[in-house]
Length: 138
Image (cartoon, rainbow, N blue to C red):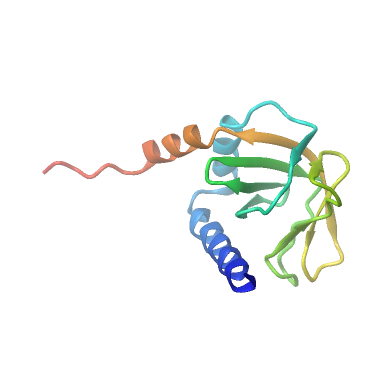
């Protein structure tokens, strides 16, 4: 089970690295365009992974079609001396905006989650696909 969890974390880290080709501001605008209205809390269970957008925004992937855009009190997501593994301070089955925090493993710094917004994952994927260069029909 532990090996499976470590594999999932490694895949999430690689996915995060692979998706940084687009400038942070453009990535943030894309996510915000596909994010719904803020919610007060979400049910938190075994997350699939996360993706750092910039120092104040993180995408939390719960399931293949369930992701959340988190705005944090930042900038506090400094990966300089810390491990690229995030933990949430949630003590129960829910993560709440304005209450719970994101912690970077190995760093004494933490960020309060200021806002949680659901992401239209299908819409986001369609927008990304539309942005990909189309092969020419020569």
